[in-house]
Length: 116
Image (cartoon, rainbow, N blue to C red; front, side, top):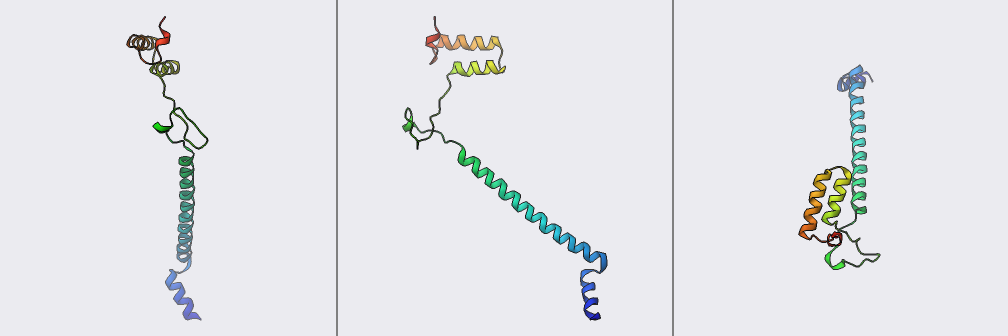
């Protein structure tokens, strides 16, 4: 029996060194396990967000919408974009007025009803 104890103590480094090695192996295993769980959660969340994102509509479905078709994407007119940028403070009043007058002068779509 003493021979086995000597051999085991010799392989594990003996005493505190053996416990330290065993603790590091257990800690490594736990860290790898936690990493795999976090990776799985991240992948699941990423796949769920991609599947819930609406796809862009195709040209063949413009003007029609059914329960199975993709939602129709409405494009903003240039004036609507300028209004949104002005409202958010991205551009000032002078820039907005210049853009608006340029669009009215050039006859951009959606602007003709603003001419007075």
